[in-house]
Length: 168
Image 1 (cartoon, rainbow, N blue to C red):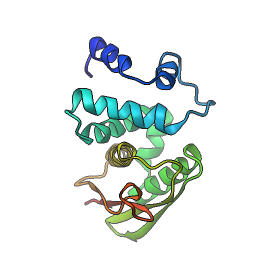
Image 2: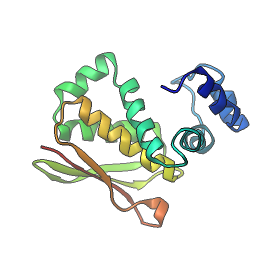
Image 3: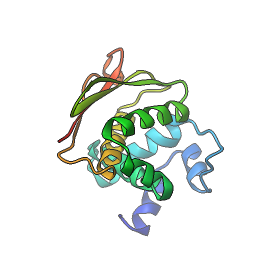
């Protein structure tokens, strides 16, 4: 989106561990530390291209959903109801980030809340990335009049993080 020069500028600001990871193919079978390899690079992205605004992290989460939900995965997202997509996404997140406890709660006809009660290393950039990912995953599903907002957040001292999702 920002071009090769911007990519080089972003890489030049990464810490050594993240630079090592992003200089090689990302392997799905490998385990990467979440703060230096995801949160910190996201903060660099926000600083460089979004004037330090974590809206850049939200946009990064949306982009990640587009990339992750390609091919056969996109078909599963498209044919699922919003509730099903949220539940499948919660299950996938619990597998990707360990230990994580996440559940879909307060399920109503056109709304639901994702509640995270355990997450390995909470970080404000990850809060925003996750919100953007949820939003774009549901948009891919064809959900209209979609609104995803954050509620309580562990990064703000709350016992859980919540993402309120409304549609229709």
